[in-house]
Image 1 (cartoon, helix red, strand yellow):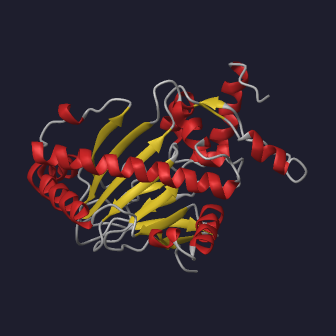
Image 2 (cartoon, rainbow, N blue to C red):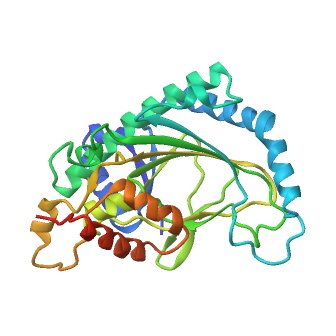
Length: 315
């Protein structure tokens, strides 16, 4: 089983059809794929990595050590199930940015993160259109579905996973699916740790220099009525090396109403009776906040109840 790697340069030539097929297979069977030659300059990625690692060492490392000491995590003997071995902060880009309010970030780092976010947002929208093409939906359908009244939500979770003395007892990040739309990850190319669940087995997502890892969130599973799946993943803490992870989430706007694309339901009417629920994205997120580390199916069931209560029926 080879992890799907998509070379975006091949989208412009004779190999376009084969590459689109590869993306389709990854969306249907993996929920993850890795992009190379994606158009984001390598120098920018190198700068983002250098600045993120410097910022962690300068501003966050000591804080993390103090947290570990305060919770006496060094000496744990049994599995810790209610926390993750990670140091994180969150940057919001859309609908409005909070980057100027974040403490500890110097102007150069802010400027670089802003430029990086703009390029990632553009890439996310390009990918959504490729998904539309593969699904037989009109161009722009997914972007529109995410739009709400103020456009999509877009934000970046910057994480560092420091060396962990007991990786068998504490996960870097516990297993979960992502609640949102499409997720673009720039990860450490030296320290591994990200794994996805495929056919009942945990598989490593290979670290590759200058690549962007893409995974699909719960909302794309709903809109495609289960044709594409959001897949469970986790981060295994390592005993040596700090792993950097910069995950950017291109999600629906909080008031966007999410439901299976009618065009797909028509195509599948004969084969499929199960229809995913219809709901307001913010209500799904409220539910997800409480149930993140549990199976997604009960979330879909619970949100049906909320949707029925609000008279959100599919016509």
